[in-house]
Length: 145
Image (cartoon, rainbow, N blue to C red):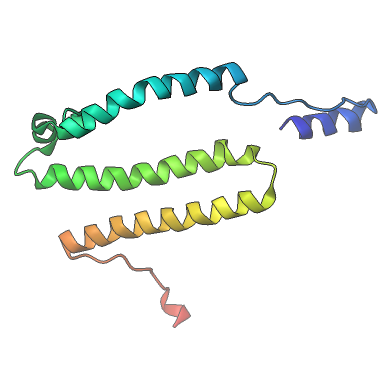
């Protein structure tokens, strides 16, 4: 957007705006701090995972989200996870990938994102078809046959 605004100002006023400087998302100090926190936090998290003391190991959390008969909750977790994958990939592509300057990297990541998103949506449709018996199909107008 900044480049298009600069081009607009230059075309209207014949004034050169100059180069547009974009700072990195995280500064060197922020990256160093995050790395130090990660180094300190890793042994504690490994201990929690190995001893089975995480929220994912707690049966009360799973039962609270399971609802009636636990099937509904498990389906909700599975479908919600697949939708979350698609949403996170869409957010990554629209907000982070546009900042990458290398076009080849952009295209590669975009292809991987599309394949993973297609796989996730395909699994959601498959699970819905498996449960309900209804298939998803396209509508072809009778004049196209």
